[in-house]
Each structure stands twice: as structure tokens, then as C-alpha cells.
Length: 289
Image (cartoon, rainbow, N blue to C red; front, side):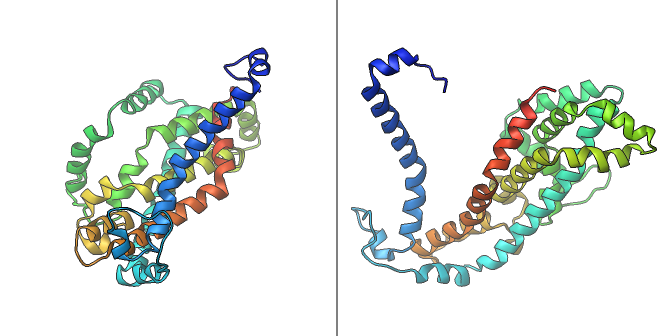
């Protein structure tokens, strides 16, 4: 294992090295896990216990029914369904369109392809907040069509497709696929679309997996953009609905924490299941051919 400290220094100060390493590991673990523990246990407390000036680390009261109350009284099922539709619809559009763009830039090499790719990468340098107003004005009055997409899934799906990072990651992976392999398929009579479907996509499962996970997680946890384009309560995502409900006095604090826990569970489960695919996909996209 390579570290910033030489093997000689580690052997000389072995106890101190492992003490510092263990302390840093524990500190970072607590920094990441304690907020989750506080949210989960806070939902089990009563509102009175949560309002105490000196917080309790372990719940003195045990109110598991707050999770069921949050699910029913806050209508989490409806907002959960909205979020699932938005996330998987966005994932589908991202896969279809971003793969097509990356394949064209990598293998079809259109005129001014490098200029287009450079423009996409340059857009990554812009702060996301600087793009909010132009994107919002575009969604409220789509150029040429004159359509208002507010309170529709398209307001989330279309901006999500224009993701330069996903296109770059896909292109980098497609660049590693030997052109000889594609030429052999073309000699056998396969067209460009057939080569993409039968040769490129089966070889690209790792990077497709990581792009899929990033797309779903990105749409699921996004808050600011859905808050702007989904003002109608019935069309809101789970994160926006929880934020709106938190501003009312109708939802107790423990119930709100229970709603946050429920909203977090799907993404935690997805990450735990596909964490190897995430790391493997990023590593595959970074290797040289």
C-alpha cells in the first residue's frame, strides 16, 4: 500500500501512525453517520423531547408510530410516486440521448465535433446557479414551440438530458473500444445503429451502470430546480413536498424527521447495492485504451 509516509517512518513510529489513522477514521465516520443517527432516532422521540433545551442522545420515549403517521398524514406515497416517475423518466432520456451524443462524438466524428465537445466541457466550468435563470426562462417558454413546461415532468427531464459530465464519461469509455471491432461488424453488414446496439452497448455495461446511478440519484435528491418548476403541490417531488410541509404548523417535528428518513432510504439502498458498480464504472472510464 502506497502512502505519503515511508515504510521506514511507519515502522519507527508505528503506534503513533495507527493511533492517528484510527482517530481520523473514527472522526470521519462519526461526521458522516451521526447526522443519519440523529435523524433516525429523532423520529422516534416525542415533539416534547425534541424541544428540550438539552438534547438526548438516546430517545427516552419510543414512538415508532411516527413513521406510519408520516407516511399517511403527509401523503408520502403520492410524492414518492411522483419522484419515482421523474427519476426513471429522466434516467431513460439521459441514457438514450447522452449515449447517442457520446457515440456520435467518439465514433462517428462529425464536423466540428471537437468544438462541440469543448463547448460542453466549458459549460461544466459555469456555476449551476448562473444557469438557473436562463434554464427557467427556457422552460417557461420553449423556443420555437412556445410551450410552458411548468408542473410537467418535461421540466425535469429535458434539462437533465443536457449533462456534459455524463456525455464526457460515456465518450471516454467509447474511445477505448477498438475501431477494428466496429469495422469488423460493419464488414459483416451491420449499420451504425446496429453496431451501437449490438457491439458498443454490451461492452459499455459498467459505464452505463454508473451513469444510470448518477442520473437517478441526481434527479432524486435535487431540490432547487424542482422547487422552481413544480409550484403545484400535486406535482411536487418528495424533497420539495417535505420542505413545503415543514413550513406549516400541521406537521410535528418528529413526523417531519420520519418523512426525511423515508425519503433517504431508497438512495441509501441503491448506493449500498451498486457501490461496486459506481467505483468500477469510474475506474473503467478513466483507463487508457
